[in-house]
Amino acid sequence: MKFLVAGLILITFSGAALLMRNQWERVERPPVVQAGPERTTRCMVWKAERGKATVWICGSIHLLRETDYPLPEPFNQAFREATVVVTERGQSPEGNDRKEAQAAGMLPAGETLDKKVSPETWKALETWALSSRTDINTMRPLKIWNAAFSVTLISLQHLGFSSALGIESHFVSSAGARKTAGLETLQEQLALFDRLDAKTQERMLLQAIHEQKTLKERSGDMAAAWHEGDAARFASRMSESLQDLPELKKLMLDDRNAAWVPKIEAYLDGTETVMILVGSGHLAGSGSLIDLLEKKGVKVTQMEYRTTRPLMPSAGNKE
Image 1 (tube, one colour):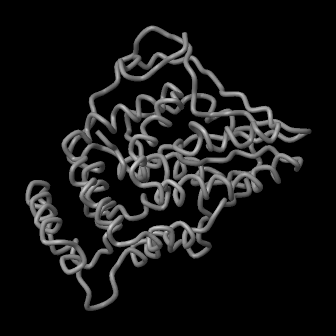
Image 2 (cartoon, one colour; image 1 turned 90 degrees about the vertical axis):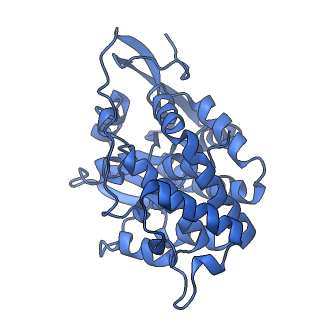
């Protein structure tokens, strides 16, 4: 089963986390993770080296749960060594990112979502709203792509996932005197979805509703794969989810990866140690940042760490 919208939110598009609204309270706490035997596994952190510079490329999950902490040690090592912290999107100097994101996801005055989608899609959204105890009227002013994100964000928050616990929030809030930068702007991120035709946006919305059936299991599986540094699983998941939407794959992954590589190379040609945080979906498979950098002759090494977190059956490991 595809995991499209949740995959975009968790490992591809950091701006989606800003669409989460404070009134959506978490209602389910994940079970406490019991310690198991200590073992070695991979991590979603790569050390990229060329010349004198070191660039830590760190795969993020943009929303995490309390039980996903403490983070794998290579993330903390990268942060300790870094003098610059780079995220997908630069932070607004005014601190209005959340307001800007939510405003960008609203329809023009006088327009409503129920008039933008088919009656069948609106009926499916009404059914979801009733089952999730969500006021359907809060969905009416949203653009179609924002409604798709909102369906999944509400459910993820109910499962204990929070943007405040996401890796970007964790490290940027602790950056202190370190310099911070972004690979793109929030406005550039949000504009991507306005470029999608209404038919594709409606497919996203229907997929978001359909994903609710297995969201708990699949989001937990994705978090487990992240803890194990299972890049191949992320590549498989995104390939499966985007195979029927080549235009979305091009916009969200291929074009952005290609645009980011020269910026990462510029850091590699510098003298500072840099920590780069991007969604883990950008670091897996053909055409990923790791693949593109290796093709340019950059030495890229995936890190390992010791952990006592129990190995989930579906997540690969390396003993």
